[in-house]
Amino acid sequence: MLRPFCSAGILSNHESPLRPAQFITRKIAKAAVAIQRGLEDKIVVGDLDALVDWGYAPDYVVAMWMILQLEEPDDFVIASGALHTVQDLVKIACEVVGLNWENHVVEDRGLLKGNRRLTTLQGNATKLTRLTNWRPQVSFEEMVKQLVLAEMAGCGHP
Image 1 (tube, rainbow, N blue to C red):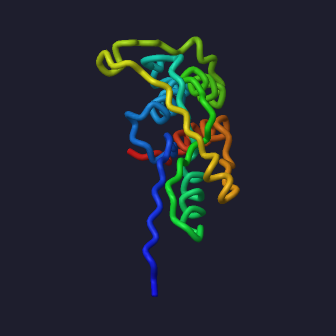
Image 2: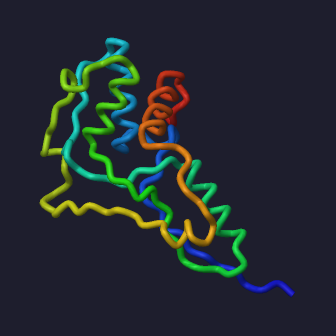
């Protein structure tokens, strides 16, 4: 007899080239490639100091699969646990295409939504790691590089 099995996963930001262009990771990757190709000259962001827990979507898919292999269902956080700034993201994206990020970035606080107070959310995947030995395999730096290379190859989501 089959028994019910229902686990819940709370995923922090998980990035891939399939993200729509309005997401900051995709926006920055697209802009870096466009600047390198002479099609644009600036990357406009709202807050270079904003901290985000970003991870690579294929790593998170592995985590979800591992959760489903457990004997008992439970609730899990899937996250890198590492915080990086938007500036970190811009700097790496520009380095991939041979640009000095400081020459191409404009910070426009008007892009931030409303007056709401921005909070930093950092995931804690300790329980997931303890029960499955899962850890992200792709570093933040490698993830950004992969996003930019996919953009250069035209592999991103329209």
